[in-house]
Image (cartoon, rainbow, N blue to C red):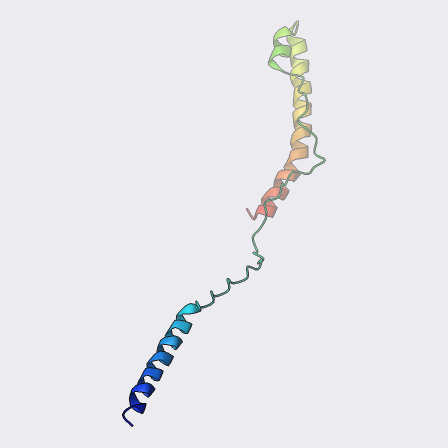
Length: 107
């Protein structure tokens, strides 16, 4: 019986070593990366208050150059009056747009 015990111990040791080596041979699998999914965020997007069909600023007749080259005071007054009419029309066009922008912005 004495011979069986050392053979059993040798067999146990060799099995243990083989198991250890087999365990070290296989690296653990890397954890899969989490899938990235798009999410929606409720955030207001800036939008222009100015309508796309709004005209550019008009040419005002009472420019510095026009007033300097006017032959007399009557011509200058006529240029100033014409400029005032154009400005008044432009203000009347802009005021509703500004009011709508303020209303949309919550101001």
